[in-house]
Length: 349
Ligand code: SAH
Ligand code: SF4
Image 1 (cartoon, rainbow, N blue to C red):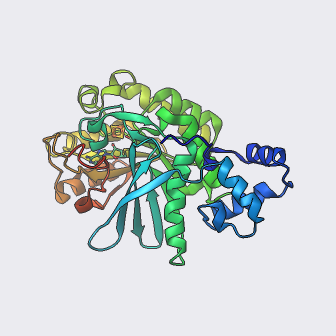
Image 2: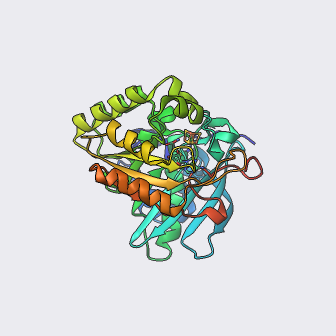
């Protein structure tokens, strides 16, 4: 059954405030509701006991409070990676992943159900595009885990938009969602705790730079060879490497913020010393950091991950050319929660 009420998490503060006033409510109701939803993680009006009972019923009739139905949760053996599959109200699926790193509680969230970019190495890409998420559906993924952590006296410290989908193909909703999560009246997580990862949509990188957010930006580069990059990432034909790198330089210049490059190391494909040298040359002089992530193999992409030793050689080569880099741990592999392993059950891998 289609849900007709607006999703409460899709509404900005002013809209909610004016709608509640139209319902004859006092001015402080919107603040009361936002505090309950975004700071104490109430999930329905019935849980907001500070509200008058008849108004709780009115709220129930006027808005939907359920964006996501968690249908399955799996935990890695060490308990440090937890993945949840959610059914959306229209029957589509998305996933989000919580990762414990020392003191950090990093949440990897989805921006779309599926993805239309079709990168050959990515499980989400292999499943195709379903639809954009609304801002409320993006916010709700964070609130779900925030509530869970809150129950254990813990909290979300970082949010990365690196789950399913290409965030810059759903730019407005992603930015609205992060602004909401950053807003002190709502979730109030510091701007620098957010990272958006894009495959490299040049006009959106420029827009993002011009709008001057303090959120971090990561670019999925993977190679600086146009022929290879177009094979791995079809949209490279539209936004080739030099244009992409120019947009990145513009971003760094405009915002004075460090940019991150994501580089999945694929054995024998993009992991040689020559590849590292070509990369170092392309990004030299830019305030940046390179994250090297050994490929998470997926069935439809025949290639293998680079060995730990070769990954270190690659990293050392970059460092020798003054490029800061880290070889990232592969997390959540056994529960298919690694980068690019997010895909609806049974649809891929
Ligand atoms: N669409 C965005 C964000 C989601 S993908 C983007 O492409 O940046 C998140 C990250 O996982 C990207 O850096 C992507 O290139 C990487 N990734 C996808 N599949 C992968 C795989 N099989 N192994 C390693 N990294 C992968
Ligand atoms: Fe989409 Fe990113 Fe996967 Fe490419 S890597 S298919 S852009 S989710």
